[in-house]
Length: 168
Image (cartoon, rainbow, N blue to C red; front, top):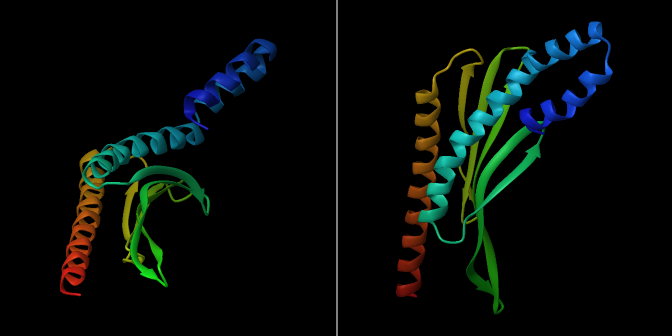
């Protein structure tokens, strides 16, 4: 649920709620929870800009959105044939996922980037920033670094795989 859809859901209630409770509704709309939803949405938008660039550069990648372990995850994935087993292609996973978590108790934005190239998982990269910090540049630097590492690993593995197939 987005912050805007949450607001649209609550606004009709304001006409049916007495004035005293309407103030509670206003407080809810300005609450930390709403601010955390908005922060997650802004973060997702920043990450999506880089994922779209990866999608254009790497054939077959598609954008994904899902929940995992309480975190909102946005990423890009592809399944590609890689070798065969008794005449059947072996499908290999390529993915880069950004798990976005806004922790209201610790007042932190946490992002964990996980990536896999041709079924090989790489170490997760982590980004942590205070919720109140408006350091968009640090976030963009982190996401760019993750995407560049993923693309570098992808093209390195694909090139190595092509060289092995030529020799074989």
